[in-house]
Image (cartoon, rainbow, N blue to C red):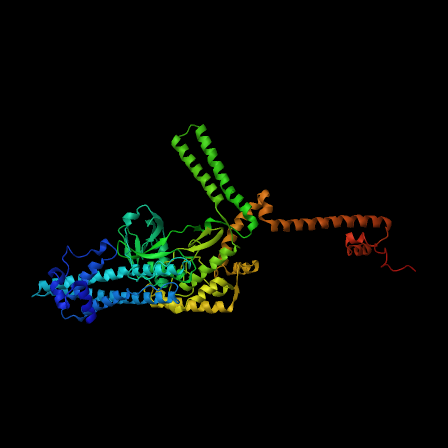
Amino acid sequence: MPSLKKWLKKTFGGEDSNSVQSQIPSTLRYGFSAAEMPNLEEKALLSHEDVHKLLMSVSANYNDDPRLETIVEDYFAYNRIFEAKVPPKSEPDFMKKAAEVNRRIMESNERLISSLSEAAADYIQRSGQERTKKDADRELAERYEKMGVMLKKLAEHTLGQQAAIANAYDRVMEVRHQDASTPDRLEGKTFNEIFTDTRVYRKGEMEGKALGQGGMNTVYKVHVDGKERVFKQGSGSIRSLDEYATDVDVYRERLGAEVEQRTLSDGTTQFVLKDVETAKRDVAVSRVDQLFGFHVAVGTRLVRSETGELSSLMELSSGQEITKFALISDPTQEQAIRAFQANGYEDTIEMLQHAVESKKKNGESPALIKANEEELQMWVKEKETKSANPVICIRDSDLNKSLMEMAALDYICTHMDRHVGNYMVVQQDGKFRVQAIDNDTAFARVEEGRMGGSNAPEVSLEDNFPFVDAELKEKIQAITPQTLRDSLTGLLKEDQITVACERLKKMQEHFEKIEVVTGDFTPEQIDKLLDSSKSMTSYNAHLTQHTAEKDKTVREWARKTPEYYETLLPQEVAAKRAIAESKAKKEAEKMTFAQFSKETAEKEPSASKKDRSQWKKVSPTKSMEKEAPVIGANRTPKR
């Protein structure tokens, strides 16, 4: 094995592996001593020096086990891949070449984890078996145990490298989307040079920083490199309440999770999820978003939790849930919707003001008065905040384009839980765009179907894309299924990657058949997108349904508020006016006919009822303009 000898010689000196071994202290030849053994729990990754020491100690104890020789040789080949240079972004097929390197690294990484873990388990088992023998060789059992521990450390380190590998590749992705005039900071560098350690995030550092808790995990706000980010621990457990039972079945069926049920000391049940790999799903969605240049998902990278789980570190969205905005379907309604927002708080504020004044007048407890005053201030502040919330017209062309891009991302990534609470809206330079969050349930097992208990729409190609924006089509057609596969290798399982590639191909074929739109969408095109009959198969139409629910509340209020009735409901007001005018016109016609009938009867008292009925067939108003019917024209002449 000349390559191994060359590497050993370069690292530790000596002419061959035997002379190298003779230079290694005895503690290293038979494994680290307890004091020297690197502690992986204190950091995310071992140092380069520690890895070399472990590999050298493994190589010094080959004995007759060919697996150990193969493992060291494979590790050498694995490290050599990192010497590949990052292709310059000016080079054709830049992303394709970078993705190929990523695939080679991740495949090698996974093979090493498997072989290291199997060998470690075998040596630890051998140690236990040797100790139980009557004529046990204690020294041999100890050597086996130390070998098992060393191999386990290398396996844990190699697993921990997956986060750093993913982050290095994502840095390459970022370079691709930089402006052509921006200097390529990675040009000439090897993957090894941009390969950085990932820190460990501990619960103690995040006390009191929880942003929220869902069914699977809690998210925390953390500071990294002077910026606020969001930490979410991978996998996690579902809380114990009964309402999560349905979710457990969903996670098992859709996400392929192994679920372990535990009964806690207080009698409640906890469901522990295994093999969900939520952090990898999070990062995979972020990577697909970057690959296509959508920029609708929050940037996410892999990190480690204190328990060793791969977790996700996300950018903190600068937007807010769309449900926090004032949604309108007509731009002329903005003034009225703001009045409605402010009006909703008036009664409560007035009631609290009266309560505070009454308590002061009656000399009640200062503490009680203070509590009412604080509640009053809270409602006043809430009124000011809500009234200042941006108003969004769901017919906005930029918003609808951004929703279509998010739909394209979620279709490829099989995201089944994109309800209105799982994306934010950001206003930038006067334009609205969406930001997809909570992506750890993407890459579900099924191609169609919503998550259990969710009111999220599923993306239908036909309903969500009756036509396609020219820029979106260009982004979709620029990436081949193979490049997508190479980009996701190591993050997802093979069947998940295959489904993503198949869905990309379907989308590309669909986009070739439909109308391509350049520039802003026309009112007619937006009508197609917002068709309420497609509210559960289209993100755009789903927003229509949500807006309609708010519209109903606002309409009821507007009908009771004369100063805003005409502004907010112009069509309804116009319809009522038309009905009133029609009714008035009919009343006028009745009066005209009555007057005409009376005058005629006085002149021709002998006119029959049949004559009078003939007059009614003629419009009364017109009858005043034309000649009156001949009286007695239908009567039989007297002889």
